[in-house]
Length: 432
Image (cartoon, rainbow, N blue to C red):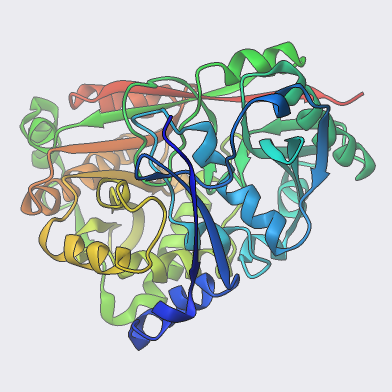
């Protein structure tokens, strides 16, 4: 390890350089006037200090209260993954927005978060959530944990999980499940297979020891989720795809996103998705506010063809959304858009567009599921993304996440040449 150097930057020095188009980013970044980062051999790792005698100090679990604590909470993963070559630092301003009270998720949910310290060094974190919308649909007295990151120390995991469990008990809940960061419609699951490849956009990464630490604390597997990857040209040439194209000809149609009426399009997509997923495990519907915020954000970075709507007899019957893998082009920004990160990001979106993507949303209306029509709609939605992806010279598309119990879906993906390459796991525990 090289000599550590503390650098203090005043954000006002760079704020005036941003254009009006980036005032939202600037506002998020100005939530805190000063930034302290640790530099070691020209690499930055936020929230870490020198290790040594502090490791033998008693463990403290401290609620996250105030901007300074939230900043430490957000930056803690930089220390956990400092030597992990495939971890990709998230954008700090996006993480601040995610945990902000302005996140529409908090219109139907409450949360609490904690940091674990040895001395003054943060060594772990966790959150716990109560989702009233989930409870209204399932009424099973289940709360959630998420944002779990910690050093490889059973004592840290025990103390963090105990804090979340105790808080959920105080809320009257009898089961804890996770990780959910923060809800099932966001980033979920703990990576248990596939540690050697970087996560794609809006999917998680983890240290291999996390699963073992959860089992030690009495947690058991609740559900497994799969991530598949597939090359667009492989899917296009699959024999079954050619057959489906012939059967669907004249019976159904596909259309891309109509950007000129994006608000109406968001309502259509949300309606299809909520209907399609309504009987699935753990389902929580997207609220109008959640889908609107997500949709308007994504509309700025995706091509019209990355959204496809299947219509049967003139009525929307299915939808699919492809997201460019922004992790490709942010991994060297170290989470920062200032002072020049935002320029790099814009240039790359224009000139070095990601060569991989993720199918993040997909659904077929419930009345067509378990029918031949539903199978054809599914294949046609996937087929509809192939040309737009190849027009961007994409070579790899992830389809995630797929419930292990959803055999029909992953069989379809495998029939097109999809390779299962990551497994995520959800854990749960009765609180007694």
